[in-house]
Length: 206
Image (cartoon, rainbow, N blue to C red; front, top):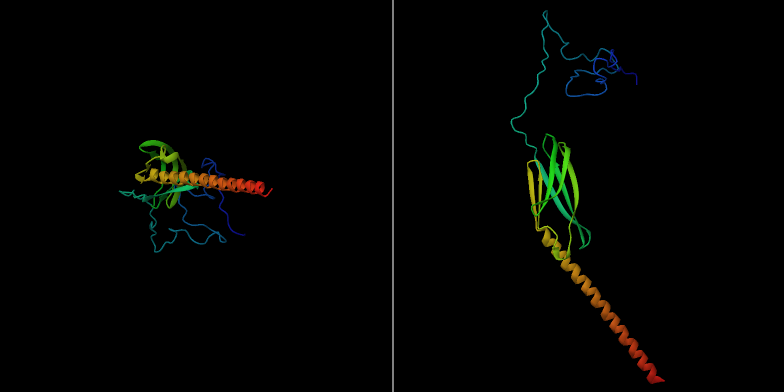
């Protein structure tokens, strides 16, 4: 490529084996990078005017803001994996703020009892964390939770009406099975009736 490459003359002996020329961090400043030219562009501070050069580049550390708003949002969805039988809870946590959250726990409570807990190592700005959980299912919602409570950092959300959805699914499943059984027996009964009528007609004809 015919460009200049920065080289550490001490072969990283003074940095503990860390190559600061090919990577960056928050402890060092790079005022300029040279490409095809070894002298241009000039680094800030090298532009001196007048007979008495003075310091014209100042680097200071900024202070922390008094209040950091992470602007967290949570989106929940209950989906049916197997219609009317198997349900899953999908939780998406969005960090729409400008600061990251490290090592905080996500807790899921079913009817006030801890059902799931996970340590999220990092939730970076403008990123999201997705979680899927199976919801206990039983006939007419006997073992299904009524409320689901989600807690993460300073965020909490209550999902209500879960058992109602399970009960509706159970009722629909029950009536579907009963209807299928009734239709099956009605069909079998009519088939048997026609078969017996056919035997009877055969005997009369003979």
